Amino acid sequence: MIQDPTTILIVSLLAGSLGIDRFMLGDTGLGIGKLLTCGGFGIWAIVDWFLVMGRAREVNFQKISTLI
Image 1: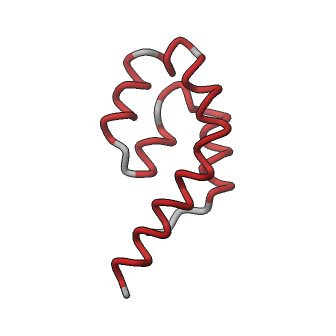
Image 2 (image 1 turned 120 degrees about the vertical axis):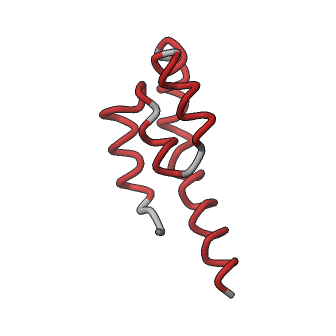
C-alpha cells in the first residue's frame, strides 16, 4: 500500500519516538530500534522529522516500479 508522505510526517511528529513511522514504511528493524531507545533518546526522532518524507517517497517509488 502506498503511503502519503505528509501522513508519515504527522505520525512521526506525534509518535516518532515509538518508531511507528518506521513500522509504517516497512523498516521493521529501525522501528524496533527506535522503540527500544525511545527514538534514540529523542535525537533520532528529531532527525527523522527531516528524513521520513523522503524515505516515504523512496518506498512508494519502489512499490510502483515493481508493478511495472
